[in-house]
Length: 558
Image (cartoon, rainbow, N blue to C red; front, side):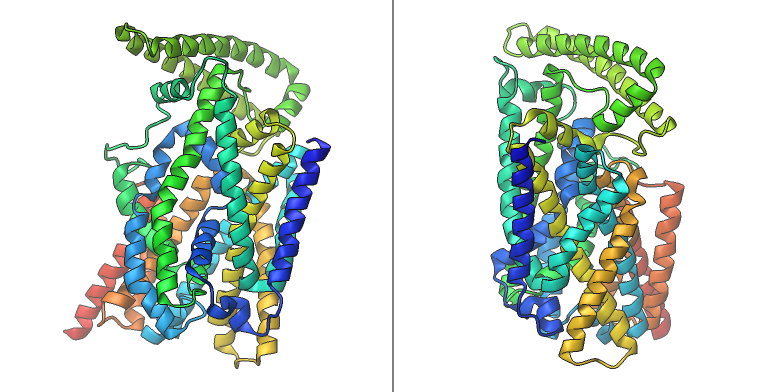
């Protein structure tokens, strides 16, 4: 990067840390440290919810996801608005009325202590592991820019955000998320504009979308039903609904954002607005990826977007790299010629020739993809990369090699800010749950000053744990998929426990505890056998808990 980029990057990150420390002053106890005094307006709640969900993985991996697999990933969010309505009607009033610190406090009131402990442990495992993956995502940036060891960059990335998270708690997180998210949205809009502005002279956005569409990158809606298809309208609405209901309704990282609202109205408004704006936002981010595909159809694309690893490979294994490079150049030249011809045909009167041209283009694209897959295999084989693909590097490559000075530093800062927004909230929620749901259940409640100290120690401990998890995240392929698969292994069971708590009045603690253990075992078995795609795991987990609890309740009645 240029000196200007470094200045912008460091000033932006340093400014956010200082702002978070400043806003987080005046901590007195667990009420202010965990709940931010419960005085946040709806728009702070909204930005906190969105910033917590939209991590660096969203902005780093989602464009690459669309580049490689098209825009069908957006269907993953189709069940979210329905879930927001259900949570606003059922979950929020209960949490606000009971004035809980964590979502799992309610379960002890409704069932018993062991059910509260089981649910919080499931949450701590799932959120602790996924937060580690979220730390790894921005670490890719430092590793790519500086050529630093990825393990060192994990420590730097995770360590910096702990500063204001440790000192300021939920209040610092809420205010920094507000500023972070506004910067992120503006910067991503600029990046999208520059993708279109950077197209060759005479190539319009319409041409780019036409090429992306003919290459199956604009496949927003896929109606075919397949249990193993990860992204279609059925898995999106049904599986996505259950996942969103569990994530926003029972995951403390999200519950902790909206229980800081001034009252039930502010919390509801923030959550419902999230349901309205989340799909358009995610659609826009994926569209950038589809446009990037068109951009690199007209311009030379690298054989592997992880250029740092590829350069080392080309230098260390020239006898393997040179023949691949020559074959790739020939294929990509052929592909560019076909793309240009197809774009020119778009406005012609001879539409009969479009179908065979599009078919020929797709065949060439398949050859290109196969060669890129060969390169990735060689990188792993010779020890130059641990990633199963280069999806996470596609948007990063564009930023690094295409954008003007100054904007490169800003876009890199954006990915850090997005990461910090979600990770800081996650670490705060982990600390809240481990302190309130586990430690304070087995010990007498300390005074306010000791509660504050314990909260900070739990925050520090979870920060270190998540950095440790990031060290093992290098083999997970597309990070946006990895983090959602991980959540789906636990969210269904957690959701089922809450659904029974709300709607199966006759179920007792022992029944729902047993049902939860059975459900989690079923989810793990189904996942290992690869019977269905991961979104359906949320449905399976929730339904098994509910059905077994109903059967257990009937047995008790009889």
